[in-house]
Length: 320
Figure (cartoon, rainbow, N blue to C red):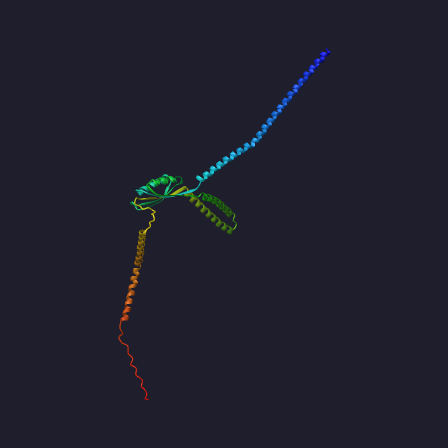
């Protein structure tokens, strides 16, 4: 019995030892797995933390690209749409009826929102010419030019542009600065304590206000020129001569020019002679009569002839 109890105790001890070993192994595996999990978690966290600056840098670069694109778009708008440009044009169109064409041109300008700035006409026959100065809004400039060209046969066209954007910006800055100077002078004027200071400040204020008015007048002039373009249109009849004739050369051309110069010089000479003739008659006739009378006086013979001297008497000789 003692031997069997001892064997059973040994088995129990071995079984408990096995359980303890298994429990220790399981605990070790669990701790190892947790450590590996923590390592992987820390590695993932470190990787995410390392990727965050890269993602932030990419976001900043994208934002910078968007801002640069917006700035480029703004610059493009300033170069094209927001610039102050003065458009001027001159054209000559030959038409069958000058008056009818002038009325049609007036209607075209009125439909475009403009007006006639000047109207000069010469003759009423086939060689009639009408000079019209048209003021049209700048956006309608090209359309009005094309419509005017369709009134007849276009002989010439000249379009000019002048960019005054920088001048406009400079005027705005100068006007703002000058207004500040005027306000400063007005404040100083209210604080004047003597007649001398009052007169001096009034003169300075007047000068500054005059400079401001001049700058504002220039700004209004530029605004008018940029808002309303100017088109000078010449409507010529069928028999009207071209405005610019080609230069001709040759002997006959020189002879013709010389003859014209001779005739013009002769005309001027005859004109001067005609102007002097009354003075010559008024002064020349009395002077001529006086000269004739003087000549007749010189031709009258003397009534008493000259007395001749007696011949000389020879001297008497003495006796030897």
